[in-house]
Image (cartoon, rainbow, N blue to C red; front, side, top):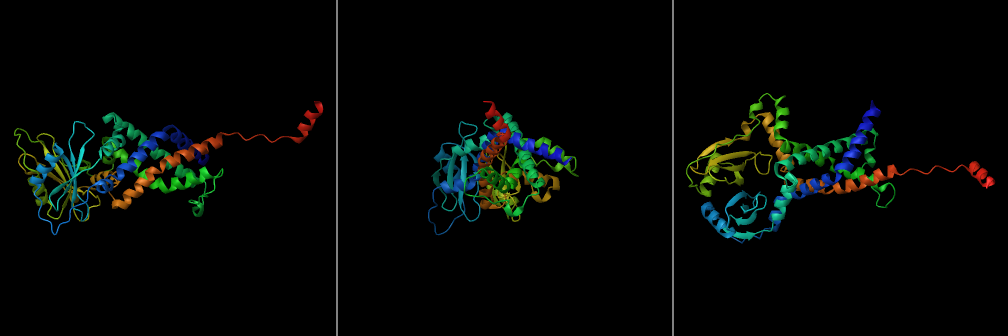
Length: 374
């Protein structure tokens, strides 16, 4: 039974890696870049002007200035983390996947400028949908399954060989026939935790109904897995200002900080994600739905009121988007993603080495007989 399991693990690890390796590298490297999206946006943003003090932000005026500068409507707002006062504003374009990116400083109340970040929009859609919409999302899920199975089977193969933990990460800098195996083992073990975690959590985004259905079979309250959704407003085309949306969210959670605002398309509800003390997501665990017509709070998705199964769903999204542990966690996740091409190359060399037939040793006696005949 152990030999059969070992052959199955070896087969799945080798052939899933060889067949889907290029796609796995594509998803891992693009995912590593996406993990660095917030720090890269702040790194590229212009510096904030010096100010003696910060006045209360007039968000209605800010929205007007931003829309005038960009020549487009605000699509999404990303709030700062920590003591920073710069907001990353995403504005709409004619493309469904590319956006404008404007930096606004809330302390001075000024638009600081724009950043060249459309390449990141393209990378995000490549990672999520392979640039193919909903069909691409299903394919990314299939690639995630391959990454999960390949990673776990490789770990099991290593464990079944009764390894030595002392030499697990030992790598010789001198190139030899053992170099591919040493680098493959060390890089694989170092990145395995992140890669398998990203692959598993990605299944919740690619196949949400299936994963939630499986969770509902063991959950005591499956009806609370879905987050609260607010109905769309209809009729009036007059929308309230951004200031009213911010004020309604702040009134709902006075101890919260606005980390993300998703503006509605047409008559609908703005989604304001709030971070509160104790939240594990950097974007916050609580969402306030505010009517874009009346300014009233239409629904509140409060993390503290969620069931255990519903918290698992949110934890999967936070894990996949690297919202745990701040910038340090994002850097480690990105490094794990960037290591996958090394795993693919070293794994390919190991496979090639195993396919090379060793020459049959010459038989001296037989050689003398042949020489005598000739």
